[in-house]
Image (cartoon, rainbow, N blue to C red; front, side, top):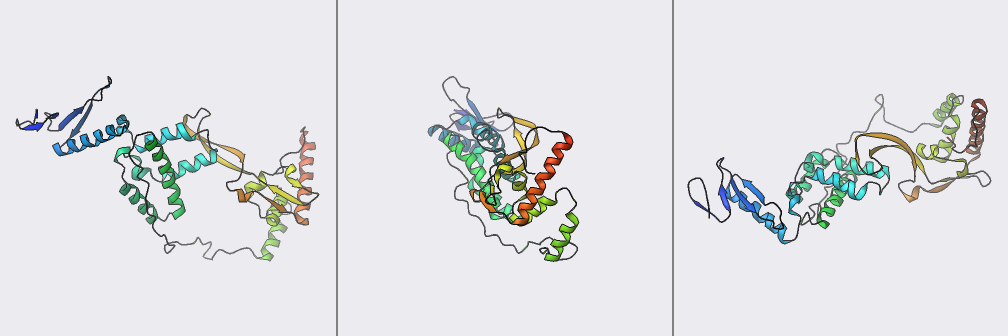
Length: 309
């Protein structure tokens, strides 16, 4: 039977150290080192012991009780996410996760409770984040912790059952320019804009954006094969963007991310569409192709024209 510093019996397996802390050891068997648990009170050590024995009972990997959420997120990304999804999606995962770091990222996996996640949700809502943004953060954390449950590192996922507060825009202040409310350009202003832009390099691009409603990334990803001059329509099915790269091709996290330009499929299938072309847009495309051909002759480049813009 173990004893405290005064000689009082503490029970089998419990002792008190010279520094005043209480301790107990749990043997894992199989040649593994025993785990030592410490606490400032006997009650604290007994509670830790019960928790650890419960994990053993359910076959959980008890060596993971030292892993923080931040550490597990990195391992989860490396094992299950990187090189399986697009770089833009990886960026979204990391952006979503970064919002939770100050609240629960430093915590040990086994210590995270549903109340911690719920408090994080309330704090994010109080900071003015939209419900969809908060949901994306909880979704990434939940997927990460769900894999820990599958791997027998946790008994349950503390992200289950989270309640999202109703968020109003009562504190939202719209951006104003020069003291005036934002408004669309008038027809006269549009005409003046194009009169000024007529002699600029990308006049035709402005015309195309106006008459098609395309996003700038979609327009810049266009290839000439996407333009059907015979039937007067554009086939939009990709976009160009600049994304940070956090991992190398082998899935190892980089010390410092770098940025690349890439052409990818759009995020939503609804963005894949055919856009009819008005005469002004068709004329702008023909004019732009003439500019490209002139550049090709001027700089003596070989090969055909592929990218529109």
